[in-house]
Amino acid sequence: MKKPLRLRPTGLTIGQIADRTGLAVSAIRYYEEQGLVFPDRTDTGQRRYARSDIRRLSFVMITQGMGFSIADIRAALSRLPENRTPTKTDWENLSALFRSELDARITQMQALRDKLDGCIGCGCLSLTNCALYNKDDRIRNRGQGPRFLLGDTPDT
Amino acid sequence: MKKPLRLRPTGLTIGQIADRTGLAVSAIRYYEEQGLVFPDRTDTGQRRYARSDIRRLSFVMITQGMGFSIADIRAALSRLPENRTPTKTDWENLSALFRSELDARITQMQALRDKLDGCIGCGCLSLTNCALYNKDDRIRNRGQGPRFLLGDTPDT
DNA sequence: GGTTGAGCTAAAGTTAACTTGAGGAAATAG
DNA sequence: CTATTTCCTCAAGTTAACTTTAGCTCAACC
Image (tube, rainbow over all chains, first blue to last red; front, side):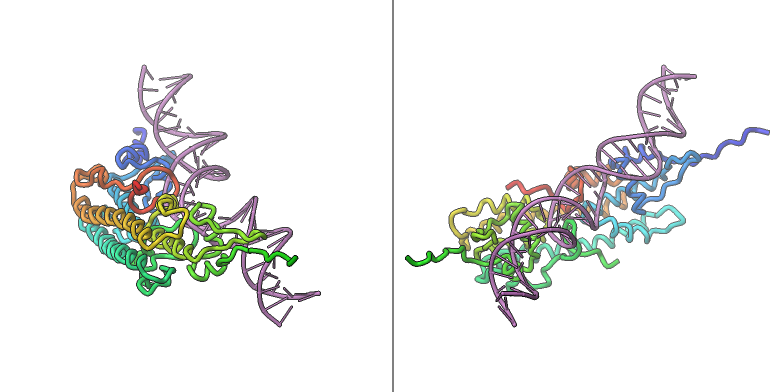
């Protein structure tokens, strides 16, 4: 009887993923903790990633760079199929979601930019009470911690 | 000899400023600590603000909402004249500064949005190494702590 | 087959922009 | 004149998104 070949999970190590994505190893582990990736484990507990996780993490990086929070991104990623590797179409649908949110944010930013001058020139001292600067321009005001640019979480 | 009239610094209390701007009292104190406002003090140590500080703080609120950091805003405000109340023109110059930075950020955001689809459709798994997604699109990557949307500090 | 590099976990630290709380003084209202 | 309300300072807490450190196991190379 042959010694059974240990079928150890194949795939990329966390270091290899780090190299491919440019992310720090600690960041990748953090993303797992936050439910953004779900690597396999070897019998000794090491993480093994699928090649498609590179795309997944790249997507996280880009959307994050666009100003979306991890919670936003996690919600979006949860729309990907769980039982198969996402197809190109899956990814396209997902990115369309972000695209429209981003469009909205850009529009809002343009409006804000255009009103700044108007309000500065206005006679009332309080820009935030200025007729020109109304509540619709208010961007985000709840919770403590750092304020992020524009918009609440997308209503995905 | 008459009891000398105590010449107490006139002006608005911190509570009045809070009401006028919508800011929390604690935030206003914090902004002072950060060098964004410089109220007078009464002989008993209470803060007294000029009416023009309402505009100053409103400006802080708006530019912050645009995604600029306190350091950015402090740098910009330092361009205002120190020895007189800023005129409408002073404020207009300042807001022009932010306007152009904001324009640049909007443009960058649009580019990023347009490229997301392209990269998602591309054959290479790593979006961040993708030919379509080059270094110019990279937004900000230094320091720890929360990542903000778009751009380093303006080169004011 | 030992040593060096890569991984692992868990806990604590970091930054930004504030808020909250403790403990006390002063201003205002009745 | 007493009771609130407002203000003050200083220290510590909060959130997001990570990084750093400590202490240990495992894998890979010569």
